[in-house]
Image (cartoon, rainbow, N blue to C red; front, side):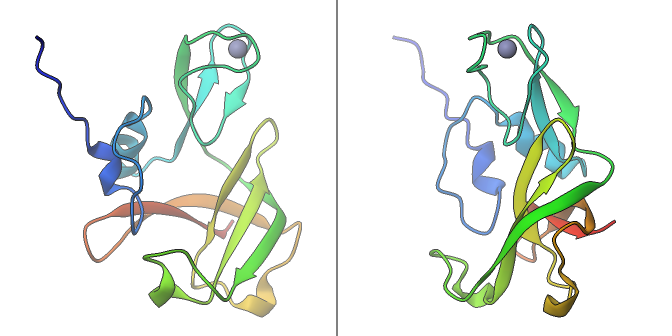
Length: 143
Ligand SMILES: [Zn+2]
């Protein structure tokens, strides 16, 4: 019987990780290099964020990584007064969806952006953020 290896890289992502194994663990390795990455289907060119290992459109598993670069436009945001387990100490904070053209990115707005400055349509960029406990995530900053 082959030894089963546990790939736990995803446990480094975010404040609290609920995922132990995924086919897209390279995502965290890229974050540690300062890059926010999604996946692109090599056969039909559709882009995915969060990264997917399999394309729902053409069912191919032939994927390549691309960097979430440049500016996105804020589509919507929500100010959270209650957070999931592990995020209570960060409240209140804002989550948002930004449109990068041919893909959209869901994420959290950097705490440095004042609540009154948040506007739908504002330009943002996805930036890797290291947490004090050694974890990594990404946030939106003003572009
Ligand atoms: Zn595809």
